[in-house]
Every structure is written in C-alpha cells, then in structure tokens.
Length: 308
Image 1 (cartoon, one colour):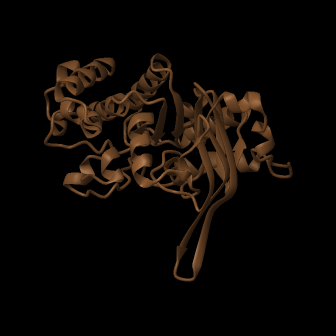
Image 2 (tube, helix red, strand yellow; image 1 turned 90 degrees about the vertical axis):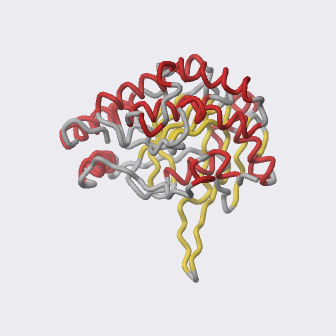
C-alpha cells in the first residue's frame, strides 16, 4: 500500500530518491541581495504582520480558499527547539495567485508543505472551504490531497522509466480510476502543456523543461482546486523558466485555480496578484515599489541566462 508521501510523489515508491535541491546558482549572492534590500527599505518603520483580524468576519471567510490560523511549527532535536514560525496567520482568497518570497532557510517550503497537508503543524488550523485539514486522520488527509491539491516541485520527480502519459496518469490510478479513463484525462492535460506529441516518450528522454511541463500536467490531472508550487523555475534556464511561468498563469485561469507559489524569482512574483515575504516567522506584504526595486538588484546579480 502506498504511503501518503508516495501518493503525491510516485518516484518515492520505486526509488526512494532524496528530494535534493538542484540549482544553477554558484553562490547565494544573487538570492540574498534583493532580500537585503527589502529589509533595508523598512528599517525604522513598523512592519505589520498579517493579522487574524484581517479575515475575521463572514464575508471574507466565504471568499477564502485557504485560511491558516495560529499556525506554529517547531522542530525538536534532543533538547533543542527550532521555531520556524509561531502563531502565523494567512488567508488566500479564492482564485488568487499568491507568491511567497524570502531568503533561503526561513521556512517557505515548510509553510507550503503544511498548507498542502504533507506535514502537520505543531499547533494551529488550516481550513479549506471551512474544513480543517489538521484535524483529518492520515487516510482522509491523503484522499484530500489526491483530489483537492496539485503539487509542483523544483525537481519534477518523474518516474524515469515510465512514459510522460503514464506519469500523468499516476494520481488517477492511485485514486482507483480505470486505466482508460485515466489515460484520457492524462492526454488532455499533456495537450494543455504542449506535450501531446511526447506522450509516449519516457521521462528520461525529455528535456528539463519538458519534464517540468509533465509534472505540471500531473499536478492538474486530478482536477484540484488549489495548486502549490515550490520553486517551479528554480532549475531552469531563463527562457524555459519564463515559458513555465506563462503556463502557470494560463492554467491558473483555465482551471479556476487558487495558486500559492514559493519562489526566489522576483520577476515571477511580480506577476502574481499578491506577494508576501516570510521573515522571522511572520508574513509581510511587499509593495509593488519594493518588489520592482528588488528586481533591479536581482537582475543585476543573476548569473547570465539562469533563473533564480
């Protein structure tokens, strides 16, 4: 029987591969400088964290696809505690494209894992349309993920010896769909990402950009209402990354998704409806002016031809 992790990551069921971060950047300089700028522009000014009061009330709650309240995550090792965030609050509106930025190691991926039900918070609640997924047992949570949430990672995590079509079919087969039905849905999703002609090619025969498009098709195969993406352009060249950003925008609209993206790419973030920076365990709104100035710094320090 597949574990809940293997349900969302079919590669784990055959190879148990480590989800190591692949990067084209030779130093953290290009990442850290824009966020140092964001900090410097705020020195001496109060930073307002997202408050529960912001979404207390009937109207806003009915418009919320995701509502996280008093979210705390603490890692314990021996006698030491690492507090990633404490009493964090987040509201994501239905149909919104939200970008979460911040320096490496601040907990962006941890937050995304919690929102997707891949990990559990130390305390707090995460509601999808009023359903608290933290209160679900493991089986109900796995079923919820399979039906309601699509995941895209920096590493596509495809089954290399299986075809693109078979990789996209996988979540539907796990759900118990007949192979013929799953194949039709998978073919439709591959057509949407421009890979119908590559459907019968093994994943190992595809380029990095093509593999990421297959991963995106797989994320949408089950018809989710929410798409969570963690650095989806992080290992791609600039041109391919820009194409993936365009696909994410178009599919967000055509599938009526609510999307949350974790990214270091400020160009990508600037095209979203809202941008939050995760810093010191809290989320802060980033203004358009701050984002554009930070983008100038990032563009000036980015290695040629790569996507941060």
